[in-house]
Length: 261
Ligand SMILES: NC(=O)c1ccc[n+]([C@@H]2O[C@H](COP(=O)([O-])OP(=O)(O)OC[C@H]3O[C@@H](n4cnc5c(N)ncnc54)[C@H](OP(=O)(O)O)[C@@H]3O)[C@@H](O)[C@H]2O)c1
Image (tube, rainbow, N blue to C red):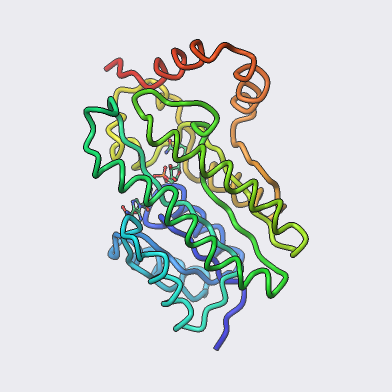
């Protein structure tokens, strides 16, 4: 049986992705929740099914594995699910000098932040285009607008996400499919501990995951191209940063990632 209005959300076990799942369920939409933490996904499934009477499917997958996106696609096909909304939200960072960090950690980051996102977009886009209907939301970052000393690979992965999403958006526009890229600044989530960013001042004024999820979800509904939840950051990135010398940008960017505590 084919179900309508189903959203697949990666990284739904916590933070921004979990709040996006709540928003979609509130609207009566069914869900496929993806992350590694099966217990957290099952708890969210119970919450949403009871509260909003929607159908929620849990797929515990490690997106750092090369075949994860294909596995996910095969499973939703086997379940007869029609994915009209794809939210590629899963991602993580990692603090430190590039040459001192574990290369396996960086490889996993590139796989989750870029490769899995690309593969999932590829698999689900085809159906969306054939149905002339679809919404894609990719979660990037304000980090995507500059190089990031002390988080070199993370910033580069997000530059990829912002670029890729906009290019695809233009390609699929005529098929009534939209692709939106969300670019949050600091958000108070498990991201900080996972990336070893405790003590970095940028997260002192972090926004809530619920507010960021709402901004992104609504931008996706409107089919916007690039969404920022902080207008002041957008202004700096669009109107100040491009006019500064590169070396100055690098110094500011590094300072923003240095630990003060
Ligand atoms: N927090 C910020 O300051 C900030 C700022 C800008 C952009 N972002 C972006 O926002 C997105 C969501 O992050 P968040 O802030 O909500 O952080 P979070 O609370 O740490 O959530 C990250 C999600 O990604 C999932 N994930 C991580 N590695 C995975 C893997 N190998 N396989 C499958 N799922 C994986 C996690 O689930 P499991 O651990 O259960 O697998 C979790 O559900 C990320 O793309 C992040 O880069 C965050």
